[in-house]
Length: 257
Image (cartoon, rainbow, N blue to C red):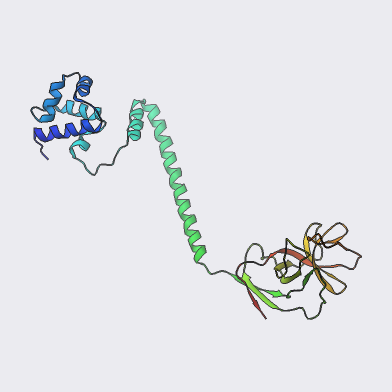
């Protein structure tokens, strides 16, 4: 693309104004008088090629950018240009060190990006996978919290729920009756129970005593309610542990008779 002197002058003027410089300031930078700058900008005359490159450098741009010779050229920010300038000030050995670090960081970033993409893909696959469900025996609202319930015909049906980290070790489910374990468990809650014959002090379990079922915490000398209005239940040697409570049934579940 061939430009006239007037077109070149207009481009130079626009670049000078864009960077906020006066003709006199430009003249001082290149060691020329102010009128010659005006002559270049009006097209009366034009600078030689070397001066043209010098002017563009003063204006913080390039000949390609000013005159549109390469419109598809990637934009180089002031920060990028500063880094390049520093790089070119290094000796060959130092440049090779920088090259090694850059290559290593590019490879590391690429690996992290690929790993992130793989994780995103796996999460999408997991979200679209059907939930694995399981059935547990459901013994109705029979874990007494405040009153005893006779152990007669307590099998109420089954409970179906998605398998998760909480219920994966559960053997059956049972409903809470009463308020003695509030605020940990409320009347009507359903809990997952793992069949064990002994639990540790401080753990909550399902217990049988004198033909009745209770949900309590095991203490040093007996069974404890979390509701302070209920006194501890002494262990007189006839308490049977029917399992450890491992969590509350929450989320989507279905009770079937």
